Length: 113
Image (cartoon, rainbow, N blue to C red):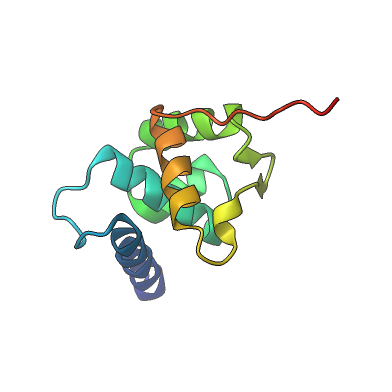
């Protein structure tokens, strides 16, 4: 059984995600909503599939799919998160990285000359 502090933290993350998406916390979560919860949870528990799966209660296979895309696109590298949305007012960047996690977008990094 999850401890109360974990439940409270997850509830707050879902509330924050809903606010960023401009919606109420849904009864049935969409894949994009879940991807956003995974992203925000990674700040708290690290970009680790097993820990995120346990924390969120989402299937390991789903978190693994998101993780694969986030790593391929440079959002997660090793144990680090590389995201502009971690700074103030990063809502649009956060939503874009959620779309990366579900495979709707890719990050493109321009090579320096």
